[in-house]
Image: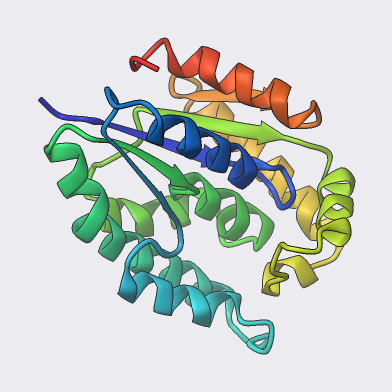
Length: 210
């Protein structure tokens, strides 16, 4: 029996990573659930190396198309090494970011075109799309304020972008939600962490035993 592929999306500072950390603790205490927690870009050795290149604050000269292609390359390797094998053995894969990030960030905010970036990624994913996606909706100003107040979150190259860029990311995500309404669930990320976690768990119970 094949497993499930569940992704978590949102702009900077939306709190999706914090939610995943809470879920991981609960899953680890649940002997009935076989799950994998991973992230993009990254998750495996090669993709983590590509992540270092993409998010390095010194790489300000990086071309937008180069950025999009690097994300797609990291995604492909991650799928082949970690995601697909886990799904095929019946595991549930929880992934911090996936294709929707590329569509919102590079496709819309960078101005490359959502369909153009989708085309690059269709080659990379070879038809594998998430069974369920959570989009953590938050005002970009609030998200950036959260980042600036965090003492543990590592600041990366995307955090250096101005507010206008992050507002475009949000607009991009709204367009992506309209493209894939059947799999994307919108979560109000401005609520408390506890409230957000409960809302996510409520939706998860519709597709898996949680």
